[in-house]
Length: 199
Image (tube, rainbow, N blue to C red):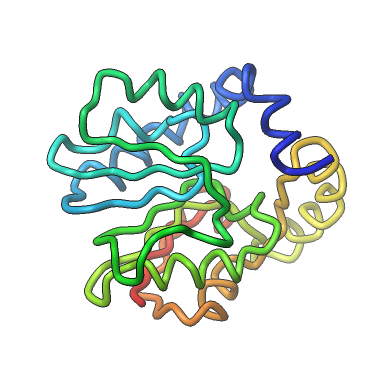
C-alpha cells in the first residue's frame, strides 16, 4: 500500500490517534517553534493542519501534503485564516522556484517520507540563502538501549503507518547539504529533537 493510501485511510482518525502526545508535548512545541516566525513559510507535510493555529497572522504560509484526505482536514482548520494556502504535492519534488521561502518547516514528517534526503535537498533548494530550515522530528536515539528498541519496533510501525522510528535524521540533514546551526533534545533523551539549519 502506498504512503498516500495509508494516510488517506487513517486521515479521519489521525488527530484522535495523536491526541495524548499532542496534549502532553506536541502542541506546546508547535507554539514555541512557530509563533515567532515571519515572512513566507513553507510547511512540508502539513497533514491535518495541526500547526495552523500556531502560525502568526503576519506569515504567508504555504502548506503541502501528499495525501488529499489529510489536506481536506487541514483546509477545515485553515478556513478562518486568509494567510494560508494548501496544495497536494510530493515533498521529494516541490513545485516551487529556488529561494522562495524564508522558512521551511517539518514537524514529525521526515519519518514517513519515503526518501528523506531528496526531500531535504528540495527544502534546501526552495529556502532563501538567508532563510532557515526547521525540523521538529523523532529519530533514532544515540542511546544504545533506546536505539535497539527502535530498530526492533520499526518494522511494525512501518507496516501500520509507514512511520520509521529509527531514521538518523541529523545525519540526513547533513547529507542533504544543509548547514546545521543547532540540535536541541526535546524529550525521551534525544528521540525527539529540534534541528535548525541553513542552506
